Image 1 (tube, rainbow, N blue to C red):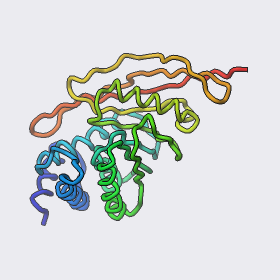
Image 2 (image 1 turned 90 degrees about the vertical axis):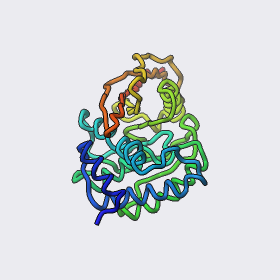
Image 3 (image 1 turned 180 degrees about the vertical axis):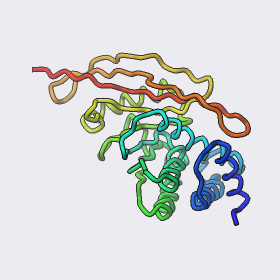
Image 4 (image 1 turned 120 degrees about the vertical axis):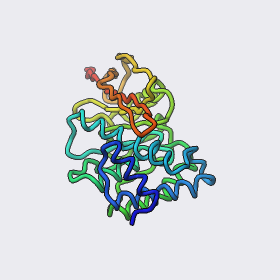
Length: 257
């Protein structure tokens, strides 16, 4: 028999037309209990009631990603970096949803990035629990600011950011990260994607052409930024609103003789 918490998850998932399984409900409840019990130690979140955790953390995290994949042509499998993940949002809920509820799983790896040491300690605490639940370890944790991160692995296909501050700052940090790790992060098509979870009144930044900068391979590059798509929607009985934006950063490379 489902617990009161699981019944509330079922209700809110049905309201928002999300898939549900008993195993997902059990896993999310375990996550929520750990979030609340460790909150004082790690200073994770002000959202601690069951209904708010389900709506403002779980549903919000999952639904934003679902709205994105409904409207975009995607690879069969891809790698995500959650920038400013905090206690694991949106990365962990959307990973669990993908791995537990989807027949065709999309996510092959997720990087959780946060500059707050205590929050990454919490992520290390929950990481093995997630791996046991889904039967594989798909999470890598980074205690760093994005612009200071030296990426030593395969580049992400998608960057996501939720509750991390102003979009202008997030994009500036992402562009600094790209310049620092250019050879490691630029994919073959030369495009980098950022899904930003914005509030209903958040601004959509205009297209921008960056200044040229030199690379170590006798080349000059310029980054171009474009807001590709905007996803507006409401969720939960309280009609919380989102205006999420998919930004694309494209690189133009000129080889210097």
